[in-house]
Image 1 (cartoon, rainbow, N blue to C red):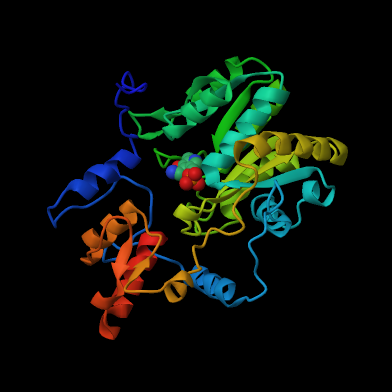
Image 2: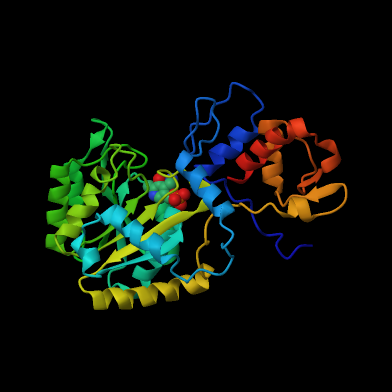
Length: 358
Ligand code: PMP
């Protein structure tokens, strides 16, 4: 008998489970409107040209090595991320009051921020909008914060319940953390106006509430990266402190590569540097350091391996994906018989592998 025989079946994730169900459906008319991932007219994953170019540069760069990144990631990436959200001319950045650490996309950035707050911030209650992205309460609970809702959406108007929001934040204990969607609120698609943001800011600052911005859609709301960061920049301009988690999953189409950053804006450079040292203490035992880059680009083993087969390194799911979407058949351990391939079919196989690993 297994020592794990008492383990019960966990439910599928409410969002990612939709894709699992979709993938199981053999009917060709099927349409997946669950996961937030961009698709082409043909319903295929979209890779931005700029990302393709960057991948090409990485593959061609012979000086590229596979060393560990620092715990907090690539310093150029962190600087650019901070500029992207806070503005290239941000005084907080110029005054070195911002610490930015590369994390595993938006989820990982939120989790690291939450773990830091649970360890080093005096108030452990975080207010999240009602409704919000389904992963938020789980991330914050697991980090040891206690999660409370604030009113956000009014089903009658299908708009913002601004009065309810102000009342709930107004009633929050001073110092409480407040999760704010920087723009393009998920799942409602309802954002405060700039005027309303200003009122939210004044209320929060007057009560000493700590803003924790989740920015997963910068550029997606208005088409302008700057306009979509206005909410965050209002809170930076007043000189106060805040956290911001950035995801590049959506706006760069890098879903599977897990590219993101957490910034903590502090009152002084000295505090920011001590905060950064503690972020490292959070990250090191969690996953050590972030990926040097997320692009799975080295396929030289295909040439190096001998014999009739190549052991591609594709996993069961990737193989299943290639069979399903590209009608390419191989054993589920990712082994392909090179003898089955011909030069006419190479482009088709390459497309399929690319789609499977990106
Ligand atoms: N926050 C919000 C509001 C989101 O919608 C998402 C993605 N659905 C994320 C964070 C994080 O996603 P990821 O970890 O893939 O960057």
